[in-house]
Image 1 (tube, rainbow, N blue to C red):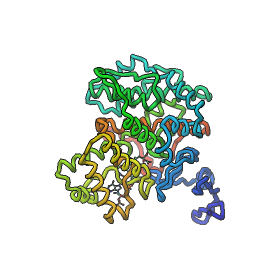
Image 2: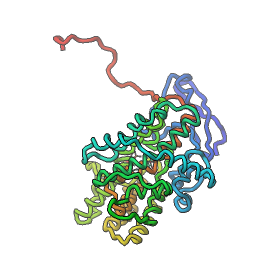
Image 3: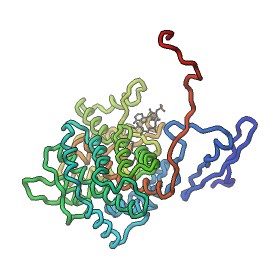
Image 4: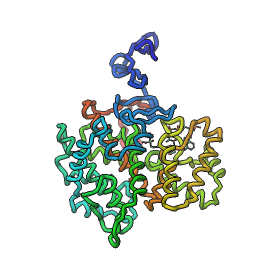
Length: 429
Ligand code: SDX
């Protein structure tokens, strides 16, 4: 516990004092919001590895101990006992809903679960080869044109209405992107179903046969969506908060978050993991060769699904997904050799000093693709499923940023370019 609640920074002969902020889990930060005013000096921290962007009451994670909690509830309990809509409510409004509140939330979402048919024309204009994340980000932004009331939202009611609209419409768009990739007619699912049940039906319903709900698939999708629902100030969530801080609307902010998640170092890693595992399988399954590539600094190859900016211990989500992968493949009667390759890689990495010294463990993306593959979801759709899970987290973080009336995000820099110089006429250059 920090005894003295002040920090002293000495620059030259000057000593400056700053407040310490101590969080509810005893995390400590130096409040440098007055630094430049006091010293005319700024800090610099590429990738923000040591810099907090905000105070938040939504998600707590302890990277050293491998702890993840949403509003104080452990990810292990939520993944085991909750349904995704409850978790969405918890993240966005701060508490688990009672039955009455949950029913009203689902009703309000269902009442908004229609997407303007003209959006299909935009979807149809994309080439079949278009990456689903680019389509999803575009259609999410396009949704504003069909819902102008969400453009400039300030009041509690306006924000609530925009939230339920987005929770209603994004799953429909996700299912349309998935079905377009498979050449299937677009589907609206079934108003009478629960939230995850309807997502599953919208995706897996086939026009030529009766849809029979597979409870294993529904509970697996439910668990994966919960595990992806929020993760404090990661790259895409920070993007949502930064875009939202300019008072761009909720839909535009989420569209930006989807684009940030697409990157292979972030949410795009789940697709990259499967492509890596399939390449290892195709190459004869020689994991040692790929481990050597991952450690070779001259080789750009990285062991995708390994390492994390915050977790320097097991990602608790990876532990849960690894168990679920075994269970789901068994229940669906699928044996996929790449699951064994993944387990072999994990075992070798955790015994290898390169990975141990750098505290590189499997992260959320390492096993998730194996489950999506077993559900016959195409590789390029894996990050779309990540975005579907992360939606309530992004919404909750955007809402918190706006409710806290945070200032527009505008970082400083240290200029290292040319000093002042006179213009040179063309004939003199
Ligand atoms: C997600 O932030 C979040 O919360 C994200 C997320 C969420 O829920 O929102 O958890 C989701 O994005 C998970 C991460 C998915 N990305 C991957 O699996 C891609 C592979 N992993 C990495 O590229 C990397 O580990 C990052 C991007 C995840 C973290 O990068 P950092 O924190 O910037 O660490 P770094 O790149 O500085 O690596 C430190 C060292 C380096 O070696 P040295 O320079 O010390 O010799 O570890 C090495 C790196 O070369 N390293 C790896 C490695 N990851 C790090 N070496 C081989 N393979 C890897 N995967």
